[in-house]
Length: 246
Image (cartoon, rainbow, N blue to C red; front, side, top):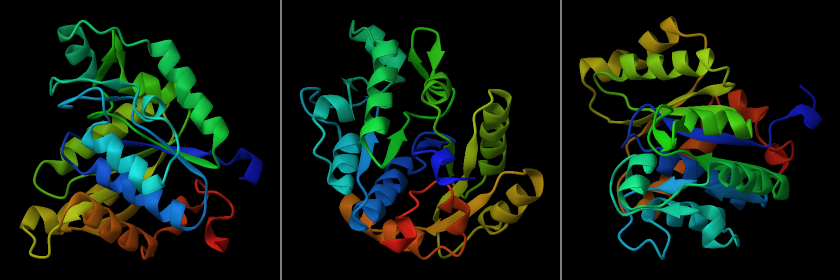
């Protein structure tokens, strides 16, 4: 793959809510920013925001990690109070999510930056606007997926379903990453990586250990873990060509 063909970003999705995709997206943003790469970030919609006049916790963390000067309205165009899927929360709050404009905003951010990280809400099948899913948005902007999954019981089913859905919707996938692996593992956690690797052709980018502290501290720890992954080369073709040089 030539530099001209290299996708200029990643779409970070999860196998479910609460798998840590915001922390992973922010850790990648921090890692890129610290290497002086002009990284754009976006979360198209965030639910469960106490004060929609301000960025929610997820979008705020992304902005900080990327050291982004982008206005809040670009980083997260739709901030919704109800802790529901964006389409459901928007309907409840009588807000119309302009899907076409959302795609245009994402494409503009991608065009204006060396690399862009866009974090979805929930998983690929999360309703975003009308009859459109988060997967439709990912396909419209054309960035490859990085799937974040959890390590515990149930993750094999959830991860395989997500990867299967991506393939069937013709969504390019950069790989999947197991997040929040504890030091003391259950039997399910011990075997998750091997089981997934034996059942799918997608790349296991790495396994990230559990981190502690506030969100910024967690992001810093995860950025260090990602930088040290022996499998980071699997993401190299999706990262800016200057990544390894900076």
